[in-house]
Structures are given as structure tokens and as C-alpha cells.
Length: 406
Ligand code: ZN
Ligand code: ZN
Image 1: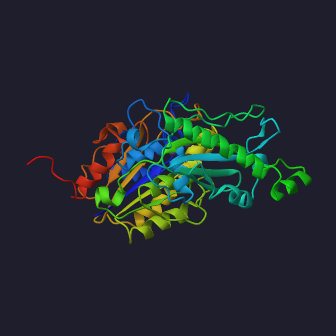
Image 2 (image 1 turned 90 degrees about the vertical axis):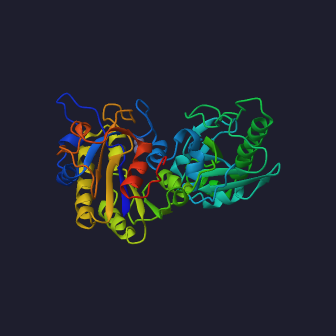
Image 3 (image 1 turned 135 degrees about the vertical axis):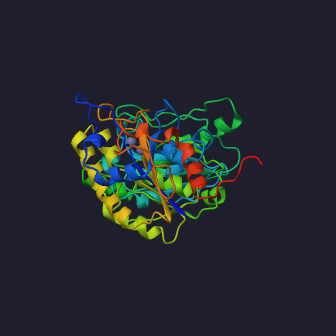
């Protein structure tokens, strides 16, 4: 048996004044069919009352305790852009930014500069106080920074003031440890070096001529220590893959040693190539025992507070599901349809409201639920579960769970 978990990012919502949500109102014949043929419930990815990030939610859904495996966004971003991170590395996400001579931030995104490959070379590979610097641009003004060496700590503050007109923040240790003091010092040096190397770099001289904001500093944030994580294949004995458009989810997959399947046009936005993703999933099932697929557009629409767009995205995903269901066999595949968290239109951010979940496949206890939405699924046979319950339930259905006791 094989298994698929499909995560519709930001799927859940809160009812509007008419008692509707985008999911409830959307025309979703295939989702409803899956609900009808499966066992339904509601799910909190991390825990009841916890507002999850997409990262912590996906870790939980894959059966990893986010409280021990998630140390910050940096490590997952770094893995996502292809840095082969090692346990103990200290990783950050960064922006290229524009500052003046007094280190006041003029533009946090350096005019959304597109070509930063030449600037990358100035920092990547440096060695500072015996610590190796790995620096990779990750598309335009974004980058990732990894420090590798002995005696480092992630108990330090950010450099990014998060606002224009404010000074680049000095990195400070958060505890009195030697490691934190040393890491903060090294990072402050790197920020200064980035200014010295970038400020008069030909890339920036060219931008000055054109009247564009220069990319003359890096602003690291989202620090985390790369955790020791048991690879997915080893934990479950399943050959696993991930299909996702966003770097963060790809990063989580890479950190767990899941193969990341690149899909043309998968952008993580409402314009993503839905059908390409559906086809890639069906194809992946020829080579893998397990696939997690994330579809991101509904979350984006939720963050934008765009009810109609969220509904539209959900309807497009229903089209994907139609193709998927026509091409998988109940005798071979367990299919889980759920989300990672709610992104209510009114909140424009993630909330702790539980999300619908359905498990479809051979011998599941089919319940009375006939509609896949926030209001019907809670009556289903799964009841209310946590993200970390999903993999054990699947392993049991697949006949792969170890017996606990005699
Ligand atoms: Zn999410
Ligand atoms: Zn989100």
C-alpha cells in the first residue's frame, strides 16, 4: 500500500455574517465525494489552540514533534534553497537591503533587486574566526546564510529592524554563554563585511547610475540551529517524496530527506500550475510509497483577505482532485485530504481553528459525512485529531505499525 497526504495550505476559515466560508461555499464535488467515501474529522496540526506556521504544521503532519525539531525558520529556508545543512549549523534567512553611511535602512528589499549572484560570491566561502560562511542568494533580494563551526549558538537576536528609517540592529547574545557572545560577534562582523564588499561593488555602481537602490548590506533574521532529525525513510520505512511550490516546504522535505519533485509552473501562488502538480503526484506514485503534496494558493488569498479568490483557488484544487481520484486505485493508495491551518479572511493570518480532514482508502470506517467543509467533517469518525496522529493512523491502515505490547 502507498499513501498520499495532500495539504491545502490555509484551507480553513471562520464563518462570515452569512455563516459561510470559502470552503463551504465553493463548488467542490470531488472533495465532497472523498468525504462521502472516507472517514472524516477535524485536525489541529500542532495542537488545540496553537496557531501554527506552515513549517511547524507540516513537520507535525509528517509525524515530527515541532517543539523539538523546529528551532527557527533559517535552517528550513537554507535547506530549501539547496544548502546541504548539517546538524549544529546556525542558519538565517536574509534580505539584501539598502542602507546609508550611518547604517540606517532605506529599503529593506534593495529595490527588489533581481541579480544578486555576483554579490553572493563576495560572502560565500569566507572564513571568519574559524567559522565557515555559506551564503546563497535565493532569488532576487532574498538569501540564506549558514555559519558552520565549533562553539556556535542560535541564542542571539536579529539584525533586521523590520522597518525603513531605522538602524540595522546590532546582533546581541540572548544568554550569557560564550557561544552566543561569539556567534553575535561573528555575525556583526559579517554584516559589516557585507557593507564593505557590496557598497562599491560594480553591481551597485551600475544601480547608482540607473538611480536604483543599491544592495549594500545583508539583514539576517529567523535564526535557528540545524536540528538532528531522523530521516523520513528511516522513521517509517517508506520511500517518500514531496511536491511543493514554496521554498519553506521544500526545505522541510529536504531536512527530512524526502525527495523533492520539481514541477514546472508550481509557484506557491494562486496562479500555480494546479494540473501539473496533480499529474506529478500520480506519476510519483509509480516510484514512491509516500507523497506529501502542498498546494499553497488558498493561504495566499487568506493573507490578502480575498474571499472570492480563496473560493476560486479551492475550486481549482477540486479540479486537481478530480484528475487524481480518476488515476489512483483504492486497492493501492490511502489518500488524506486536509490543510495545515486556517487562514481566515478576516484575520489575514493563520489561526488555531481546526481544519477538515478525510482519510480515503481500503477498509476505512466510512462515516455519515457527505460534505468536505469546516462544519460537516467534525461529525465524522476520526473526531478531533492532531497532526502527529496522521502518520501513525496511516501506518496502521497500511499494516506497517508496530504493535505496542504483546
Ligand atoms: Zn500554511
Ligand atoms: Zn500563511
